[in-house]
Image 1 (cartoon, helix red, strand yellow):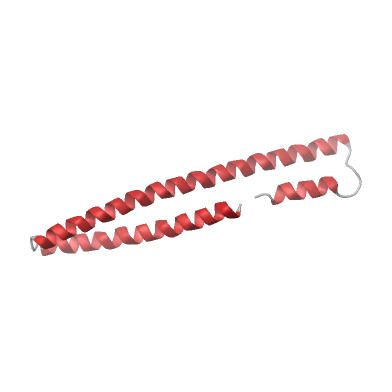
Image 2: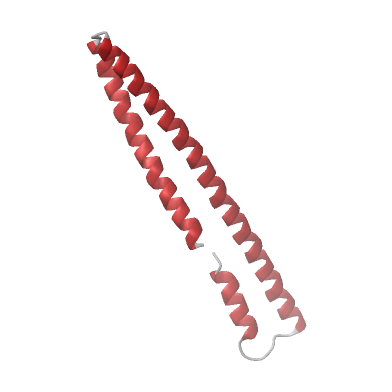
Length: 112
């Protein structure tokens, strides 16, 4: 993300100083790159917050399914237990996937 800014600085500092127009062009390009980098960081942060919210909802759904399964077991309702087990597995897999996604997003943000 910041490689373009670094390259623009190197270009600016390399060799003979550029003319006024070239220097303005380089500075404008550097500003544009910084704006894009800031927007990229904002997008990363927004994505992390969205993933956290989805993970929170998925964990709540998982707890609800587990509670319903336990209630169905208490009244010996095998059909409801089977359905609850299927949904429990789905919600657990989604929560696990969202946890890994969140870890990856946070690692990407810290790297940037």
